[in-house]
Image (cartoon, rainbow, N blue to C red; front, side, top):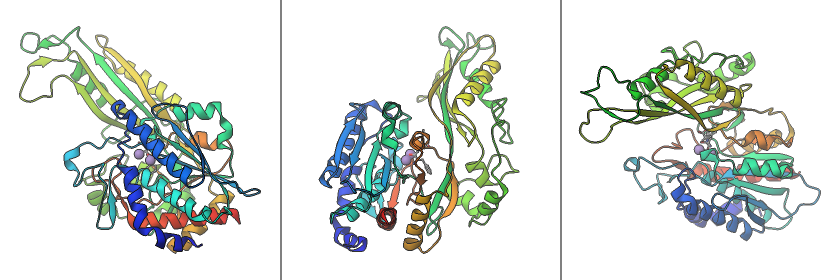
Length: 451
Ligand code: BES
Ligand code: MN
Ligand code: MN
């Protein structure tokens, strides 16, 4: 039976199934949602078992890795599908038009936390898998490796694959956790950035003090912290950490030229997608180079002191900030962590106790997209979309990808989201049309891999 026929039959019921999955608030970074993470793992495992897979929940009680093996296709290649069932926290709740864990279909989109990142995209592959295996005679051997800590940089899957590296032995790894370049423009990703996420804590006093009695003599932890932070990046956007740019290589001219041919309207990007009145960063590089091929330093939040209602006259003793650096190919997360620690220590005044704690880190990824499975995914996109997939990079990170590549299988990074899906933000959505395109593209990918 053809994939198109499968889609016609399932159009009505599949979104109800996806909604069930989306209703589980599997927020991996908040421990009060540990049970929900386990429930989401069990839900997708049960679903795959119903489709004839051998399944197992591995390596953690609270955030298990889901492993599933489809019916064997002797003599055929093996495709390993990676996805994640965990999601980011939905706050601020007041900005959602409908609640994040009550999936709602409106103007051709399904709105929910995880709709595009990554439950919806993963589920489109699961549908594609069902379409090609349900008549018996599967075109390829399909394995699923679905984690529950992608969004929190957890160690469960990394440790599991360290102990059991044979799980990533395959002819291709498929990761659909990223968007098209633009509507109608499918993309194959040639690189992902890495990340080094830390918390910086500054203590300047044994305890908080009255700002009238001691103001003028007592060192203020917030003042000290923001002083350190402000020196980590120049107003022109250059990160001031010695050695940081040493490993940064400019993308080859051919690649930069290809990026210049992509449709890109800087003003519309700034106003509508970014929603700002200026673009920051190193002005001699284009915005695409700045988001795809240069490191970043961001401050995510600053805590401590008094931020409640009204006024409190206090000199805070402790202040902390969550910060991260995004890393580009050739940079090493371990090296960058060391460079950041060293610089922060140097910037700290003698009177301050300053500590840098690593929260999580991941190396960047560069993919050679000339290997065999790329011909198949390109052809699948061409057939479904009528346009050649464009090779692009992403500013985002998927920490496990270097480990997925360690078995030698080419990793295909290609999803069906759209750039305005608002992942990690209020009103995250997935276009229903894109979901069905995903079923077709990934279904064709499986078929073509088997030919
Ligand atoms: N799916 C995203 C990463 C992504 C988005 C890659 C768009 C390519 C294009 C993933 O779920 C994600 O958000 N990753 C985190 C990783 C971090 C928490 C270690 C990220 O990039 O912030
Ligand atoms: Mn994701
Ligand atoms: Mn994400």
